[in-house]
Length: 197
Image (cartoon, rainbow, N blue to C red; front, side):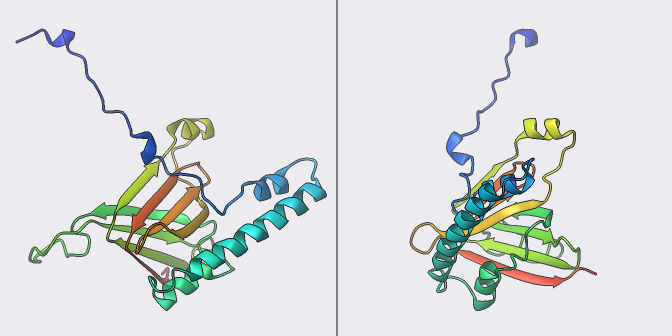
């Protein structure tokens, strides 16, 4: 047996392709122009015009997903009030048995499922998202940003979007204030809301 001090731990390196791509229909310039000092009205108007063009293109893309989403889920994604904007991520979980009770249930066919729960900015509503038929799950939590901010938090949701990827596949991507990003490519998305008691 060799000397333990001579052994080297080799860690697997993350696959660069697993880092979620930036959102396609979100441009940070709108927030940047609002927060710039001194405030530049022309810059803000240009950013707002671009944001409107991107939103129009996004809504057209969502309507094309109508056959893959329930009417309720489609309406929530297309809601101009953006019901999840500035919400907090309470839970993000994945596993092969999420849809089964943990105690006393029989084993059924296992399938990777992803769940996410968000609490609205006013703390009155919970948004429960369930994903099935998972084809890819990408997560990037930039730890260097956490240290710059002096805390370890995902922080509030800045933007999210759903897009069609391939035939019968959708991608739901999230961008958080901390810089964390999540993208889920799947066959089914279910979005439910309930009151936060």
